[in-house]
Image (cartoon, rainbow, N blue to C red; front, side, top):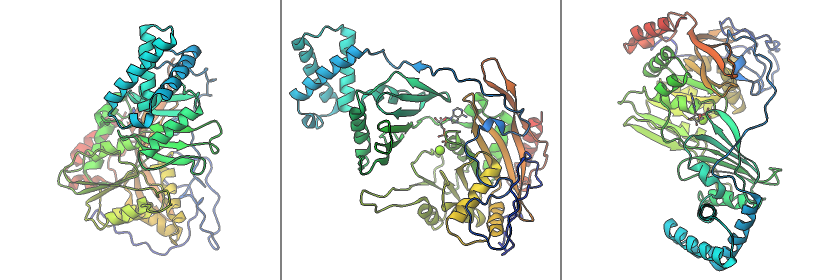
Length: 511
Ligand SMILES: Nc1ncnc2c1ncn2[C@@H]1O[C@H](COP(=O)(O)OP(=O)(O)O)[C@@H](O)[C@H]1O
Ligand SMILES: [Mg+2]
C-alpha cells in the first residue's frame, strides 16, 4: 500500500558487510568484506557494520552525539538494604531450635491441608507454647517477628515473603542462601535477607516450581516457573550453580507503566512520546530493541495502547506479561516440555498458528529464534502494525540479530534475500537502554528505509544525546530529533490522518 511492503525476494548475490550510507553513528570497525562464493551459513554474518553482535556493552556510549564516556569510577562497596528488622545470629539460633521443636510437634503435611489463616493460627498457638516451655527470653516484638518468619517458612516462600510483598522491586536475585539482591529504581542492591542454609532455599525453590507441576533437583537442575501473581521465576541449582541454588524472580507489575509515566521519568520527551504514538496508530511494523531489563516489554505494552479498538490482535509470549486494553485480543503462551521432555510448544509454533487466526496485528513478546522468519512474513503479508521485542544494543545490531536468527533457523536463503525481507517488513526500530546510572531511556527511533546494494539502509529520526554527568553520577542528556522532516512512514501517517501531528511533533523535537 505504501510502496514498501511487496518485496519480491530476488535470488541475488551474497552480502558484503559494508558501512551503510545512513546517518547512523559511524562505526569505527566495519567487518571485512567476505568472499561471495563458498559461504557457510555462518550465524556470525552481520547485516552490515559489525561482524557479530557485540556482547552487552554499556548502552550509554551508543547515542550518536554522545561524548566519549568518562572512565568508570571505582565501584563503592555495595550498600546493604535492610528489609525488615535486622536479625542477629542468636535470633537464627533460637529460631532453628523452635522450628525443630515445631516440626516434632506437628505434621506439616496435615497443616498444608488447612487454609492459610487457620494454619497460621495453629502455628501461632504451638510456637507460643514452645517459647514458654523452653523458657526463651524474647521481647513481644521479637516473638511477633519470629512467628511471622516461621509462618513464612512453613506456609509461604520464607525469607522471600517481605520482598515479594513490595511493589517497588523489579527483580529479586538469590545467589545461594547468604546473598539476596534486589533491583529498585534501576539499581541493584544487596539486602540483609538470608536463608537458614541452602537446604531451606532449595525447599523454597522446590515449592515454587512444584506449583507449575515441575521439579528441580540434581538431575534436572534448571527450571522456569511462575508465581501465582504472574512473576517469572528461574531456578538453577547445584551442581550447575556453584554457590548454592540460584533463584531469579522478575516481579510482575500489576500497574504497567504508561507512556505518560515514561515521559515523567524522562525516559522519553513528550514530543518523542507523540512520535511513538503516531508510529503505533499508523500501523508501522515495529521492533523494540534493548538489553535485559531495559524496558522493552514495558515499551511494547505502551505502544499497544495506540492500537484501534476495532482491530483483532493476537499476542504470543513466553510468559504473559502484556496487558492490552482493546476488546478484541487473543493471548497465546508458549509451553516448555514436561518432565518426560514432551509437549513443548514453541514461539514459532504459536506465530505460525497465529497466521491462521485472521489476525490484524501480531504482537510477539520476545523474538529470539526462528519465529523471526514467521513474524517478518506476517508483517509482509498484510498484518501491518505487528510488533515484537528483541535483545540487541542498537538498531543496527537488532537488524543483524534478526538476520542471524533466520540464518540459524535453517532457512536456506541467500543473505540478500533475508535482508530484503527484513527491510521490506520492518518500518521502525525503537531502542531502549538502561544507562549506567540506572535510568532507562529510549535512545533511538530509527526507520528502516530499504536496501542499497546489499546493505540495509536506516535513518535515525530521534535520539537521546548524552551531554554529561551531574555531581551524583546521574547522566545528563536530552532527546532531540535529527531534523528529518519527512520520515519514510509519512504516507502511512497521512493515510491515518496523522501527518499534521507528525510534522508538529518532529518540529517540536528539534532542539
Ligand atoms: N522507562 C522506565 N523507567 C523506569 N522503570 C522502567 C522503565 N521501563 C521499564 N521499567 C521497569 O523495569 C523493569 C523491567 O522492564 P521490562 O519492560 O520487563 O524490561 P525488558 O522487557 O527489557 O526485560 C520493570 O520492572 C519495569 O516496570
Ligand atoms: Mg521483556
